[in-house]
Length: 224
Image (cartoon, rainbow, N blue to C red; front, side, top):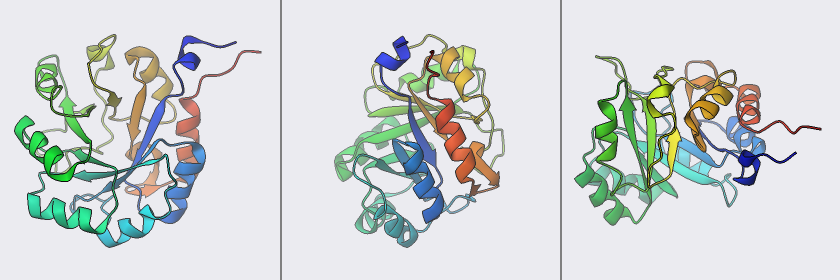
């Protein structure tokens, strides 16, 4: 039986924070639409531009290579793109809408802007980026004093965005795991999801089996 979800196509999954060839291959084999490389040095998922350049060569056509940066300046972005053939940038810091516009023009790449959500008031912050970003990543707002702007394994109250639609594509992130991603999709209506810590067996260490389980959990079960 074909459901509405089937007709709309599969959920697009982004596996973020990939650092080695085996887990990159696992993400691709399982059907990831995006693979993410984290260029924020304090993160346990950090990968150097040289490492990412080698991994990028292993990504097949049709799978988007996304580079995550946090409040990077022009020189840092230029140096990164001179080394790594990325398809998209993900801005995960305090970048303003004006900064998003500048980077889109400077790099010629589509930009995903991450926005942290903890309560209803945060949705107004999200709205500021709808006219300048190519996609929005709706993430859990990090706790006060957190070193990392994302990848903290925290979720937010998905009911805050249940039934909401925006004029640009968006991804759901924050505390997603193989065990809760189907529920999150059903509640929010998300057509794209992003995961980092939820497919790790240790901090920053991706698990191929968890990657496969996560992507499998986003696929609808066919009725006989």
